[in-house]
Amino acid sequence: MKLGSLIDSDFIITGKEFGSVVDAVNSLIELFDKKKILTASTDIVKTKTLDREKLGGTLLPPGIAMPHARVEGVDDLIIGVWVPPKPLETDDGIVKILFFFLTSIAGSSLYLPMLSSIAKSCMDDKFFNKLISSNKDEVHKLLNSVILKQEVTVEDIMTPNPLTCSKDTSLSDLADLFYQKGLSYLPVVDKNMKQIGEVTIKDILNRGVPDYIRRMGSVKFLKNLESFEALLRDEDKIFIKDIMRKPTRSISKDASVIEAVVLITGKGHRHLPVLDHGKLVGLLSETDILKKVIRG
Image (tube, rainbow, N blue to C red; front, side):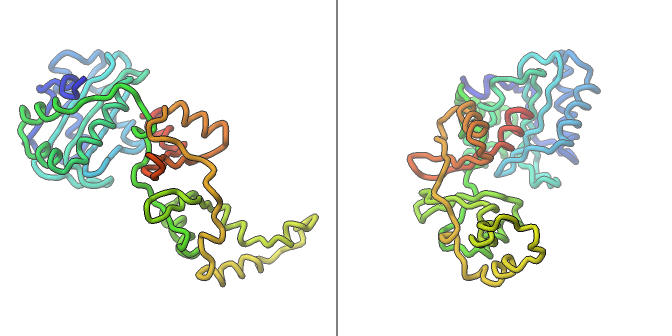
């Protein structure tokens, strides 16, 4: 199946400027309504879309906005495209092209494969630059060259090119990275992106609690943070290789989403390194599944 076959060329807007993503989406909704394909009123559709965007928009590199909403009565999937004459600056980042999706309340089996196909195609700079500089007919023709895969795999919902660390990263730099990026887990890789370990915030905390304290029957009497003071004093001298653990989990990029869910729920993992022939290519978290599948 080709991507262009799912997009009506009348629902592609090029050369027109809008002040916001919401304005562009509202204009596409009006086009849907003119074609008499909406079973709900435009006001309801606009409200549903705005409510969904308030939960957090989807903006993929290199500037692909993907607002979407689930509306009762929509027949599977309706898609609109807007190519701004110049990039639009938003709070989420710079928008160079927008794909708007309306699906039924139950969602569409094509939604995730479509997101994946669009993201992969737009990673090709030549394709993407041509797409954002074309007129309506040319955009539709380009989209019709994109083959839509039918199955949904881990690769479709993972975070590609995730942050990693090396065994020689200091504990100080690791703590800064966790703090600044809001992370709690990082894969440890070698120069070839092969995973050689993993490290979590818990591993840092463990370093601050000596073994002799763990052997005590009770630690209620310990009121100071002397052990952590020692950790902070030596954090530039402690390295990830001193605290990391051997890899305990991973999943193939070609694995099914259900397989990932079973691993996460059955083993208690919050993150899964994603591998391709032994090389780390992504990271899948329980939050990815929530955002892209449950609330996608």
